[in-house]
Image (tube, rainbow, N blue to C red; front, top):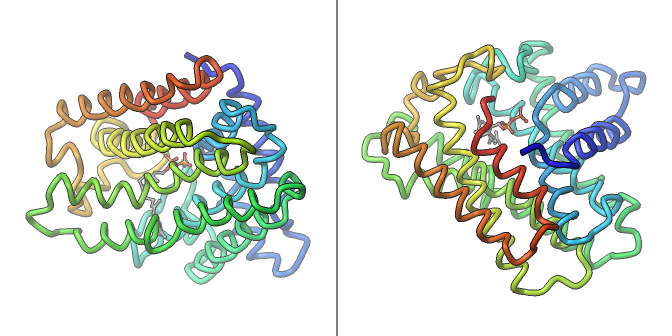
Length: 296
Ligand code: GRG
């Protein structure tokens, strides 16, 4: 099912990102060019779309979460730039284009990632949408900071690297890595919208946490399946990279069919958690379906 606001969310985030990224006519021009190259390249914008869909489910005006939506996509873009570097995955292709360090150079890519991360926090701290809600703003910033650092995405990346080439990695280890590396940011997308809501009940907050956790893991299971079943052209990045890097993945540990069944189970659990929100959560349901059925 196509979410009824899908196009609206996608267009909205492009405008917000375009407006908040420094232009190349300002020094340092090459750094700004690299930041725009990394952040505006054609990704799925899944995380900002989750922010908007969660805001819709909670009756939060989208203008209130534009800063959070932009910030999370900038953080995601930074993580991809750094993940593609020779010191990490050493990839040449991302979103169907040369990776940032290939299009520019390693030093510029490192700095562009650093600057994208700093810009994300600047935006969420200053965006006008939360000017009238300083406590909500702090809660949003706290969510983002926690999700991105050593107890979230960066910590997951560190564990992922540590597990590379290791034997004896268990499904529980894998779940820990992915809950941190991928799940933390996807959860933050949903929970930043919740943090921007005025009067969120603890029941709804708890259900959203469950939804976000399940869908975050389902995203990663699907990513692992696509690494095997899709093509480089379709993915816009190197297919088979997990096997090449000797990474533990769900299909490697569970088998392909069981990995697919796990993604379906996680999807069912995620959407069941949305029952409490009724029809207002239809866009979140549609995004969840997109996450487990996507082909890129
Ligand atoms: C380097 C600090 C640091 C963190 C890296 C997110 C991440 C952690 C690495 C990316 C590598 C990777 C392939 C992770 C698996 C899941 C994932 C985040 C895929 C890419 O996200 P999509 O599919 O990408 O949303 P688009 O391009 O559509 O935005």
